[in-house]
Every structure is written in structure tokens, then in C-alpha cells.
Image 1 (cartoon, one colour):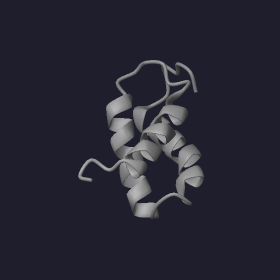
Image 2: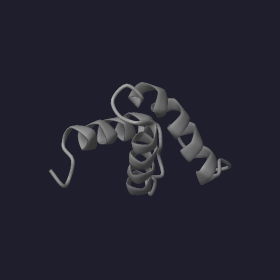
Image 3: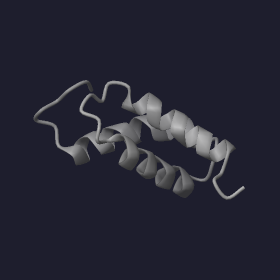
Image 4: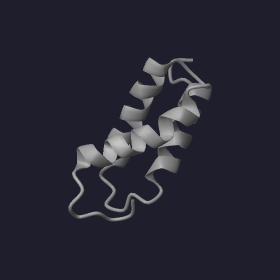
Length: 71
């Protein structure tokens, strides 16, 4: 993943989503997981180096599932 000047942002988002989603399906409903992944990517994608993006997204989603903002 690293730095890919020719890689479109939407391609990178799809790649991260597809790599993270299977590890989170046992934690929450698929729709919730997809929404939380999208939110995490929105917050993290301004980064220019995306090597650790899947790990950071997964951690952020797991934290939000454990500690919901409204609870």
C-alpha cells in the first residue's frame, strides 16, 4: 500500500475496506461496520502514507464499537 502516486483515492478506500471488513464482521452488523469503516477512512485519508491505514481503520472501528459516542 505505502505511497502510490497513480492510485486513485477510491481504489485505496476499496482496498482498505475489503481488507478490514472480514476481520470486523464478527464484532458488529455489516451495515454498521461499513459505516464505521467509511467514517474512519474519512478521518484518516488525508494522510499521504497509507501503509498502516488498514490497521488504524480497524483499531478505530473496534474502539467505536466498544465505546460508542452516545453511550
